[in-house]
Amino acid sequence: MTALREAPLKEAVEVKKNRFRRDRTLLLMTVPAVVLLLVFNYAPMFGTATAFQSYSIYSGFLHSPWVGLETFRSLFADPLFWSSFRNTLVLSLVQLVLFFPVPIALALLLNSIISARIRTFVQSVVYLPHFFSWVLAVTVFQEMLGGAGALNTFLRRHGLGTWDIMTDPNTFKFLVTAQVVWKEAGWGIIVFLAALAAIDQNLYEASAVDGAGRWRRLWHITLPGIRGIIVLLLVLRLGNTLTVGFEQMLIQRDAVGRDAAEVLDTYAYYYGVVNANFALGAAASLFKGVLSLILILAANKVAHLVGEDGLYRK
Image (cartoon, rainbow, N blue to C red; front, side):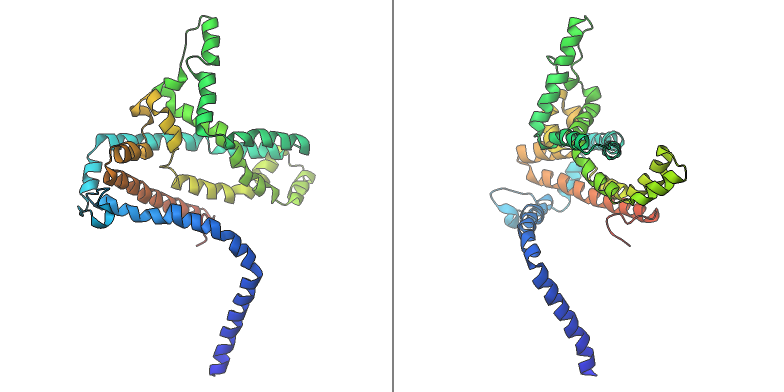
C-alpha cells in the first residue's frame, strides 16, 4: 500500500523536474524582473510602519516612537487632504469617461484598415507620444494652448482676446485628460489589437454571408469578442483610480493652483516629503493603497457577477 501511494508522488516530482529543466532558461530570464519588483515594490512596504510612528529620519523606523492612529487622525482632520482626495476622484472619473473608450475606438479603426502599410504607419504615429516624458508632453501643449501658444496667437490676430487654457483651473481636468489621451491612447490599443486578432475570422465571413452589415458584425461579433479584455482593463483602471499621474500634476500644479491640481500623490509629496513630515506622507499613501485594494476587489467581484473572469477566475 505504501508503494502504491508513493508512486503518484514520485511521478509528480519527476514531472516537475522535467518542466524545470525545460523552462529553466525562461525562468532565469524572469529573475531581473522579479528582483526589480522585490526591491522597488515590496521592500518599500516596510516603510508604511512610519505611518504609525512619530517618525524621525535620524532614528529610523526601528527606533522612532509609536503613536498608533494619531497620524491618521491628523490626516483626516486636514481640509487640504480631503480637497486633494476630491480632486483625485474628479480627475479619475473624467479620465475614465473620456479616456478609457479612446483606445478601444482606435483599435477598432486600425483593425478596419485593409492596407498593412497604412496600418503600420498609423500605429507608429499614435504609439510615438508614449515614449515622450511628461515634461515634453506638457511643453507641447504649452506651445499649442499656452498664453504665447498657437491658439492665443491666432485669437489675438483676429481680435478675439486670449484664453490661456494652461493656467485655467476650471478646465484643468479636461486639459490633463487631453494630455493623457494624446500621450497614452496609442499605447493602450496594443492589448485591444491583440484581442481583435484572436477573434475567429470565420465568424465575420459567416455573418457577411447571412447579410449582416458592418455595424451588426461590430455589435454581435467584435465587441463580444473583446468584452473580456475590456472588463479586465476596466477592473485594473478602477483599481488605479486614485493614481492620476504624479509627474503630470507636479509639473502643472503651480500654473493652475493647488485647489485644482492637488491630488493624493502630490499631497503626500509636498506635506510629507518636502515638509519632512514623513509619517503624514506615509499615512496618506497607505490610505490610498488600502482604498485602491478595496476598489479593485469590488470591481473584480462585479466582473464575476456579469460572467467575466476579471483578474482571476472564481
